[in-house]
Length: 194
Image 1: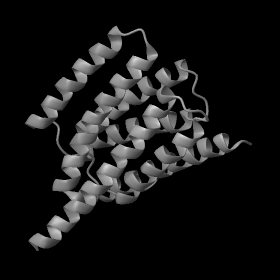
Image 2: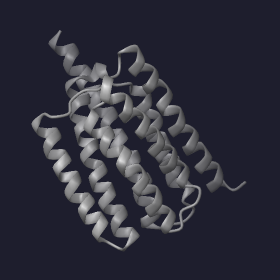
Image 3: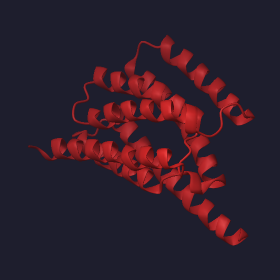
């Protein structure tokens, strides 16, 4: 087994493990997923997977494939147990995501499609960052730490310096660091208020 294979497997284990505490906490009533974020992520998970597959990704696909399936499960749970949906920023985000999907659909180049997917995914990320800062107690911190680790190991699973294949894992790592920071800053803000 090569180091790239090992990193891919570790990435897959981390992303799979990240959903366990999140789903558990949804059923306990502790975690309330941002519905529009998870809708966007569920749709884009499959697009990212097939875009990377088309560009020749191999072991780095563990992150994208497992994440797409987990995102779909969380979105389905968020319909009943989630947060948000039709406030102004959610509607704007959905509009932006829809425009991005139209752009994605109109391109025949997998690399361009992947970067459009990352931009759309970031729309969902911003919604969760805002919600995490405003309502930090409604998020499961360990999920975002594990997802950041999954992105980190997926970077090393690529096996070459190929920006197309590195783009999504780097993005996953960075957006999850931002969500972790939002949760922590939100917790500090709540403690100062008390």
